[in-house]
Length: 378
Image (cartoon, rainbow, N blue to C red):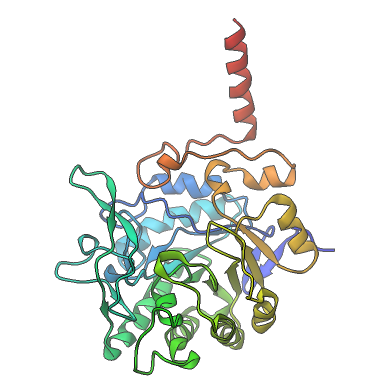
């Protein structure tokens, strides 16, 4: 019977165990969109996970939607990521880069001068994002109204994904994960509730899945299917993306195409991202069958749930997100059935080392607690 702690293979990527660190946006890259030196320690601290999926990383200037998120499309970005991937590898880990285009979940202050967010539609999302405030800090703002991509512009977006995938490999990543979830650009095309196009990229399931199929094709042609994964969230309502009535057919078509290409893995958010695991009406087992390859489950998994998912064959690996923020040694805590520490939400997005690289591992946390208890009795 397989366990969560057994080695597992995702395409060409061999993992030491089935524990995956889900992508976690931390907003510490700065205006240059280059990972800070702190990112080296942050990812190295968590490298005991079988696989680290990087924070969402934009593929182009128009792909950015939040302040201080990193990019993967220039030589500076490649050079900035290289010491991060090297540190993970030196610690025995594996890491893939999550390729991200936010589409309409953006603000004009984050984009090149004169540009608007782009999407499948000109409908605004009604969502908010993080931008640089007048005081230099990070503040919430409503997303700017988007414009619909012209049909003749879409090939350029596909080329951006392909270029970013090559940059990721040049930066030392073991592969990439296509971000097709959470109401960002690819899902803005996938969902009929958003996509109001009348060209070949709208309307039917075939039309709405065309962009993501072209993106998968381009990346696989560039770096191979064995180093390419995809993340989907069929029923999550994130970023103004209400689920569709035909979600099963839409995401089933994506999974079937991924299968044809031999993708290394599919990561699936069960329920609302970071929220309720209520997915009545959607058959995730059928989606898994349509893909037929290595399957990573995500969303609110506990130690016991993760162990059961792998033991029963419901998943090959389990992604944990927020628990990795406050527990750099989460793998050890899961293996030893040790309590998980919490995290400070106030330091999640932006800032420096506080709330990023200063969370203690188990032994240090216990020593600190004991020292505090002794001081209190003196």
